[in-house]
Amino acid sequence: MLLYHNYLTILLLLIATSVMATKSEFNYEIGKRVLDLLRDYTDAPSKVLEFLSNYREKNAFPHGLEPQDRDIFFQLGDTLLTANPRLLLFYALENGAFAGNQRSPTFAHYREPGESGYRLDGPVHMEKLQKHLDSCIDENGHQIPCLLGPGESYIECIDNCTSLQRCPDEDSQQDCSAVERAEERSLCESNTKWCISYATRSIPLSDDSPKRGYIPFTFYCIDINGLPTQTPGENAELGADGLGNCYHDDGITPVNRQVSGGYAYCGGEGIICNNTFLGGFTSGNYDPRYRPWYIATKQKQVPNWSE
Image (cartoon, rainbow, N blue to C red; front, side, top):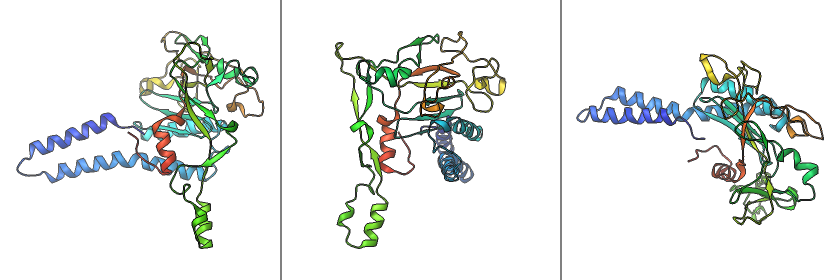
């Protein structure tokens, strides 16, 4: 997570001021106050992560944070951000699902699970992926195809994402067969985690490469309850100053999206709904799985700070 940029700048200025003002004598109270503020700065995300972990262990997310739990996370996240408005709160899964929210500006974001890079002339395109190709919009809210451009990256499954490999963390990379004692070997095997096999690919720079589509990453207006909305007068973007309307990026066109399709958010198994993109005011291409922060966290398997 990258957070508290302005706050940290202020703290560093306080440190510099205290040092300059007390060249001959260190002001203990000022120094202690600065250290307390720095401690609050670093402790906040850890406390939120601990809360979310405990919350999840109590089966508060009935679908294990799969897309059907998106709105539960939106509401919980918005509540946590009330006390921690400088945080960026989100989660990402190995199937490509990505959801979260933030304040200043106030919005939620979501990506359906699945792999981008599907060929428009592929054998399963029209049947399974047309819904993703048709779910992008321009700055005026007009539907446009979700097409990858030259040089853009995407995730490609190995063996249709049914093949597993050892996760890159230290515990999973251990050779448990080399452990002699049965109890220790059993513990070693229980700590081994298995990850979906996939690779990061890029669209060639040549213009004659086959067209490929992507699964969009959508930003949503939300109401005072943290849920997506496009109802006039319910957009919480204005914060404490009042509620407003939800507009597309042009700042003029009201959002009124009712995209129908068998999206994972609907519940899977062919269930059709038309509210997956309700309140979605802009979209783009973003898959967390090839981002440095995701790769590093997957390898460490512990909470960590990203750059």
